[in-house]
Length: 384
Image 1 (tube, rainbow, N blue to C red):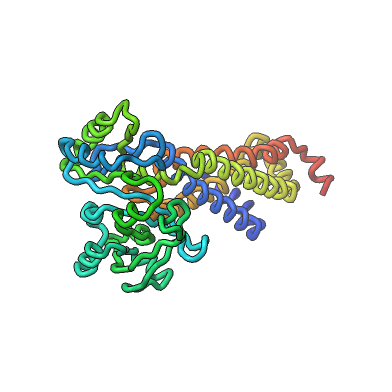
Image 2: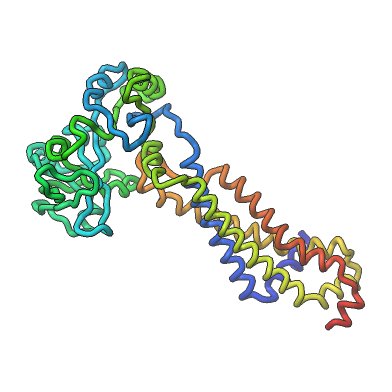
């Protein structure tokens, strides 16, 4: 610790350069923390225990439909309180850039999701309007939707049987999330499954997934196994999982999320390695006479090596810790679009992060530190 003022003074010799380098490292570890939270979420299976709601979808693929007839069998499974179902629609509002989640739901779908607050009169209107639809408050604000509007959606998957690619819905309600953590779920639209099933040209009598409410969350794992056992070795095998895992699997359709995230993190740190390494090398070159003076007054080669190395380690650890703390604060924003769980910068991310800080610190600091250690006093003073 007695050498810390000397290390700090060396870093502050060029304040602007040090601050910019530190900011680069902070940004790198901020990205690392948030991206690693995504990687962990997409590669670690979520535990079923303690879940009050489960989602049953096709075992083959999340986009593979299930027979409507499965509903009655799932309802008879011990521990199941209520079952609803939904089907992804994927319509586009006016322009392909105006994409938002929209899907058909069963009449009791909202009963399973008390976190969505819909006024009683609007719920009654939804229940009794065949072409009725409801949207989240965020979505209503974005497109200035109001109760009574007619909303046309261009079909991308399910054309209408009348030959028109446009489906028209009557907006009868706007729902709000009960808790702030669920505000991201206000960016979606729901409408009646019966209207959808009657109007589509294919897939009649099938649903996308079943939402299963269970009586005892402590028996969630057993209930899930019992449901999947019903359809084992059938043409429509199922996979029952938590809502969080279902949402992640849905998003995983775009590709290998873990590989994509790891590639981005690798590119970020390779860039930071080059940037910080160049900065440290330049800083040591500028201080060759000072290092020669330190050796002249009795500092050993090994001590000079560690003094230079300490600069890069201090920069890497300080910037990395600040970046990960900021990532912890910002990880909640990633959770908004995924129901049933949250992204978090946990112990595993911190362990990985600290390891990267040390590797980064040694990688950028060791070459200039080695050069400083082998520096000859006479040569250094003669060169300047």
